[in-house]
Length: 129
Image (cartoon, rainbow, N blue to C red):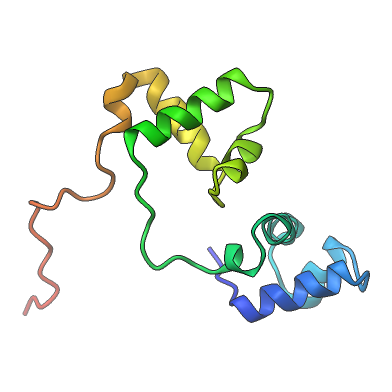
């Protein structure tokens, strides 16, 4: 997956908002793989400002209760995953969908499972001779 630096994202967003080109034009001009990527940047920028475009160095951890609240909000409102995520200050809407799937398959226990490698699992040794 291509990574685009913060400065490039801001430059493209500003050009779009200033009417200097549409999504397709700007994607071609700057070599962005998809116009959808620019659409997402603009959407996140409008919702969260520049901070929303910054890459987080550490993944955010959400409590089981927070996840349940997000699921309840989605189920009891007519909001989309994206709208629920943004209402809760999450700039990664697919998380809401993932929590919904996990909850429907495994219930509350599924929401409390740690993600990634367990902390007691030994790390691979990269210094093999």
